Amino acid sequence: MSRKSRAQGLSLVTVLFSALGLFGWHRTFAQVAAPSAQTSTQEKSQRLAAKEALLEGIKSVDRGFSATEEQRSMIREKIDELVRWNPSLEPAKKLGGEWTLIYTNAPDILNIPTTPFSSIGRIGQEIDSTKGIIANVIEYRPSSLASGLKEAATEDALVQRVYTEYTVTSENSVELQIRGLGVDPQRVFGFEVPEALKLKVQGPLSLPFGNFEVLYLDEEIRIIRTGQGWYSVNRRGVFG
Image (cartoon, rainbow, N blue to C red; front, top):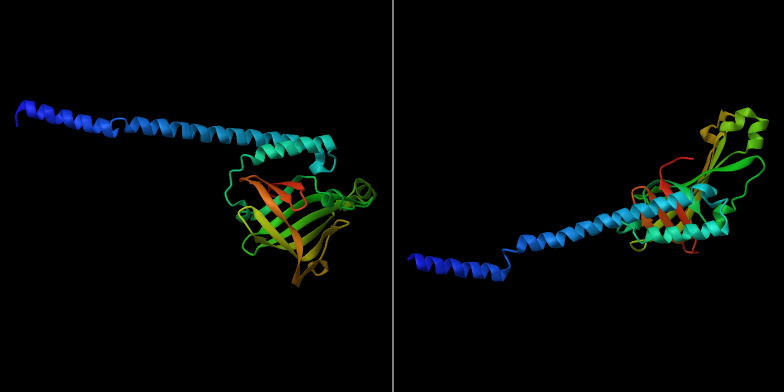
């Protein structure tokens, strides 16, 4: 083949590659991938900022017990903003573990009865996703008055558990059936309570107990809305 023929052949190949965009493929890919990565980073940054704003907003309201209407409205706005950035797909299937309540506006929690001798300790949930069981936990501790009357009572605790069976009905929705309750006095006047005196009752029948929607879930916190429209924010772990 002559030099002229080879040159013409190369020219045709060059034109063909150019027409197919193969010479520009790596640039096009980079141009598409870079904005995508940048968008993902920006979304994560906005999500973390929204979460930090919510956590900061609920610090001073004692889980909602001392919140004013103005504070509840402000917290609701922060919840709505964080929910926009929910990173979890099918969050209702990822509820397992131990959780501690850090905020709610639900009256059934905020109006838990106490006495002059008792106060509310930890409120949380123990969720067994394998068995589909949620234990709703309320811990009662001595009030300052009771501790003042009997120093040994300072470490006393009584834990109440309401057991519910849950069914995932959609990627973010859960239906509940009540199964029983447990009363677990851990210490009384400084003395450990024998296991024989602790009560746990779970019946063969279950009754409807409402539903909730998982609005937000990440590795640290979970936000739900009940069927009655009340909100709760829980943090993973046992504390408080």
